[in-house]
Length: 218
Image (tube, rainbow, N blue to C red; front, side):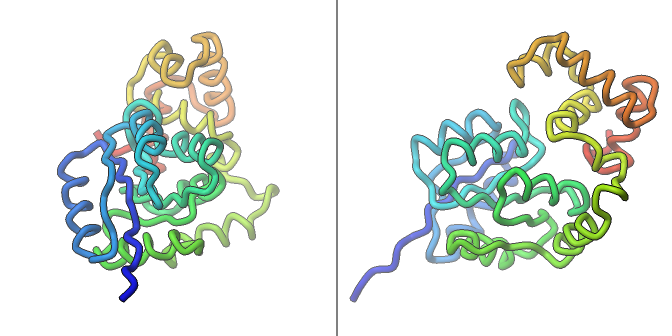
């Protein structure tokens, strides 16, 4: 009798308790194995090269490089790797950014365990996996088009990433180090964010980020 192939899964999430729960769900499926776990973005990228997973399950909110940056880099280095986003963020803004970055699927941590298993199988088979809310968010983005952009829609991927880090209280130096850019470039992004979002300072940037569910409430 021919043995079926086991799907090798990489988990990237900065909470060890969450990873433990995800590992249990994945390995109880019977046709999957967790081959690597990462607690930050840079580690995830390194482990993909070392362990050659079939599917990467990536959280968006991680220290170091965030999930959107990880997806972008993995798409460049390992374009054949299917990526499933599993995050606490509701679909809205982030599902559009994740799909643009190259993710094949988007799921929130409030989803049932069987949804995670089904999502991994689908993206492994080359299909997209999106919840109904995620599909609606994408449809609204297409229907709205460039003429109806929201303030968040007007931000580039890097601007969104810098916004999140500023809102979490990181210094310009820390942000510059995370993205291998100069402090002056971070200053430029900050000034551009304040202008685009019509805000005055970092406190207002933080408030805006929380109101739009870009970061967890303090």
